[in-house]
Length: 248
Ligand SMILES: Nc1nc2c(ncn2[C@@H]2O[C@H](COP(=O)(O)OP(=O)(O)OP(=O)(O)O)[C@@H](O)[C@H]2O)c(=O)[nH]1
Ligand SMILES: [Mg+2]
Image (cartoon, rainbow, N blue to C red; front, side, top):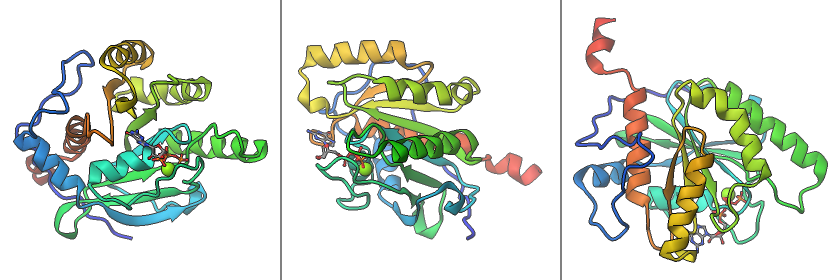
């Protein structure tokens, strides 16, 4: 499989590295950069699916993993960010995503990034042996996937970060400390009032270990533009700029 990395230009993208930077509210109209980022994400299409790590194709393009507890809203977030209703399988029933599903993103048939929808962890009805097996697969993926360029962890703020989320934070800590971009999206923000949202943000920022934290609601489209910009910027930063590529 050959995937070509296309040059990425992000118009007026804002820096997103400061966790405490105030963010635009969900009601604010999309900025030019936000529209561009969302348009880019809209190009997402199914690439491949794998039940095991060795079945994943080795890729050169930046890959961004969506991880989190079962039912946290990973698949829904991917569908919302790509503005596609059924790209990733979302479901009321936890444990819907059981494979690593890859989606290619890029205009005009090029692929300049891949989104990876990972199966959720912590679903009580899954047999213990399967849970342990899956945790090992995911830890291996997060530690060893060479083209992993960013991690988006989704968590339901009504539950907060749980034991398994913290275990995952430990697994990725060395890579995050090494500069791997890491974002926690607090999903289903529509279920919280403003005070609860502010409190959830504050608490999670203390736990995020160098990652950025944003509120997100697929229902109210809250945080969608900011998350899209974060993804777009990450891919722009990961791409070799054209001049240095030409010099090499
Ligand atoms: N109110 C509300 N519900 C949401 C939101 N995002 C997801 N949901 C609901 O949460 C449930 C689980 O969503 P999924 O996207 O399937 O969750 P997942 O993390 O992919 O789950 P697994 O594949 O089991 O790991 C579905 O019923 C969604 O409709 C949101 O922003 N607001
Ligand atoms: Mg899912």
